[in-house]
Length: 594
Image (cartoon, rainbow, N blue to C red):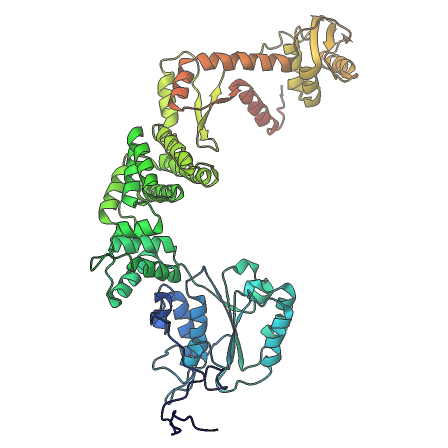
């Protein structure tokens, strides 16, 4: 090859830079960005297992496995975006192939850098293949991998196949992978990563050692961001970092990307304020959301609606406001359940305000408010005017906050009953929209009993005789279809109701003949008969419901529970009668002796 020359024809001492592909084994150095800046998500990518945050359980398991030599042939890494699945996969690949002048065995202690570490970290090692299953989903792509499995690694200890988003593989691709995955050569390891673990066939999962990378705790992530700010000489207020960690939802990568954006919000040499971060994120100030919640729970309607509108005008997303309200209500419930020492991950002054709000309210009330807020969030998401839907949600919360606790409802209504003549309603669980419902109990006079053994003189006496004989089918038919005309000794006349069975008269006559020992004539051709038992019960129930609705106790109950409805009126005498019959049926028949 000819030497490079200067314009004068003399050999040049400057190195030659080629833009073409590098020869195998001679990778070109990675070029920096044009401005020399590397984003934080790449700059602070973990280089060792010690750098992983929030994944202590996985690191402990891998440490023990490598130390004991019980190294799996396939790993499945799952978790939400940005928790470190790909980074962990590369760290495991480095650990499998770690080699230095003094160490030649798999280990998760990756310091100092081994011979293969840098190339694996840059995804340029010949024996560590990375594949994105989102873009290569077919069986042909998997067969390319399987064709290379039979060959030994070129320079490393193991050939490692890292397949990202493995759930995107087709069914045929998974099937092609199964046999090799079950019995891979000793020199091959597989590492899979996915955000959709449920889409991975169980036949594949059962052949892998699974690690669930959890979301990073908000406080841990905030501390991590603070350390990075210190290294970057960036000044971001702690509350701003908390807002970033909350918005990242446990994803380190998302948090670092947001931190990159937040750092440039600084004006001059001043710090980046929490308000600037919230404006950048489009979030409402959580302190102001707490002000909104206080006004709502204290029924200060004007203050609450004005605060909501001010936050909206300042750029807050109504959905975010509703989510923050849900968070605060959840924290109130935790305080009520656990006590003031509940770990909320909030500032001390915020916790003090939440404790004060939780103290006068019951757990049942707070649960009801949380459910209403959750419904409000769904409404905001689907409403054509989100801020109007948020205002309606706040109004519903105010109305619900004035209701007594569900567990106190029965006592309140019982107290109202003391000054009323009619029976009091009893509280029932709240309905699906959070509005409570009520059920009232009526105690009408019991039906008259038969006057003697000669036979029935009314339909009620006939029903009582049939009920005592436990002929349920006849009883139901008499109640539904018999319109009584007259009852005389030895004779019954009735008008059959619509759809009455033709055999009803004969069944009644047979029953009376057997029950009384006398011959009875039952005429089914009467006219102008009275109400059936079923019709009479419906009428009496409607009259009782109307009477209860006028009762002072019910008026008081409906005042305590706006929007409540009377669902049912029950006759305790009937229930007691049936229960007594059931109890008698379980006892052996009595025998009288002389």
